[in-house]
Image: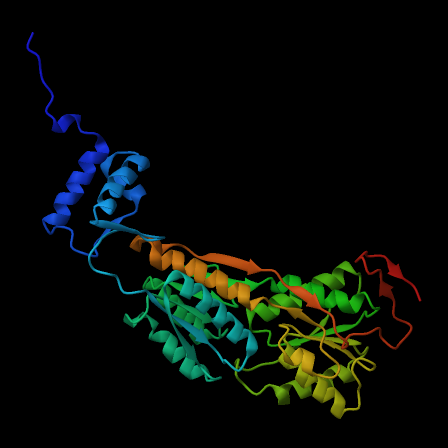
Length: 384
C-alpha cells in the first residue's frame, strides 16, 4: 500500500492558514491600508471556521501590527487612520431648553465614541429646517439625529432619506412604517397621568387644548380620555390649535379659552399639550379675570423651565430629553459604525417613560358638587 504523506501546509491549524492568507493580501496590496475586513463573525462564516479560530488569526496580525480592531465596527488594515464619523444634530430652536438638553446628551455620547457632531439650529424657521433636512444625504454626514417638525414636508423628506438608506434617528415622533430609528416619550401614558392629577382632586369636566395634528399631542389627548373613562366621568372636550409648529399660537389659544369658558357645562380643568400652551392659557384666563387654580386648574407637558417661573408653577409631565438624546445616538451609532448592511435595517421605535411634576396650578374645583377619586387611583367615587 502506498503511503500518502501530508504536506506541512495541510497540517497547519486553521487560524494559522487564515492569518497567512490575510498577511499575503495586506503585503501584496490586495487589502489597502484602512480597508475593512468585516467583523470576526463574518470572517469566521466566510472561511468556514469558528469565531474563536478567526479571533486567533486576527490577533496574530494585530500583534504583528498589520490589523487593528475598531470597537463596534470590525477589523481594519492598519496604516491609514480613518477619519472620525461625523453626524448632524438638528434642533428646531435652541432657545427651547428640551432641545438643548437633547443636543448636549448627544454630544456627550459622541465624544466618548470618538464621533464628531455638528448642530444645526433652525431658530424657529420651519422652511430653513426642512431645507437643511433635505440636504443631509449629500455626503457631509454619516448620519443624523433630528427633532420632528410634525408636518407633511418633514415626513416626506424623512421618507426620502430613509429610502436612500441614510442613517437617521427621529426624536419626538413615532414612525412605525419608515426604516429609521424613532424615539418619543410615552405620550399616552403622560396624558393619563396629567388627567389623574385633576381627577384625584375632584374634577369631572376636563378640556384638552393643543395642536392635535401632531401624533404626540393626539396621543396625550387619548391618555386623558383613558383616565376619564377609567374614572367613569365624561370624556375631555378637545380644542385644537391649528397651524404649523412655529406659528404664533396665542391668538388661537385666546379664542379657544373663550370657548372653554363659555361651554355648558364649563370644564373645571384644562390639560394643555405643552407648557408653552399652558403659559398662554394663564394669560388668557387672567385677562378674563379667571384665577389659576381658584377659577380654573391648568396643567402642561414637557417640564420646560417656564413651568417653574410662572405664578403659580405649572403642574406638568416631564419628558426626559436627555434619555431620548442618548438613546438616539446609541441606536444611530449602531447603524453607522457597523457594516454597510446595517444601514438597511427596518423601522425601530423606542418609548421613553414620563413622570408627573406637581406644582400649584391644579387644585380641587371650587364647586362642591364635584366628586373626588381616591389618591390610589381606584375607580370608586367619593360622594360629597
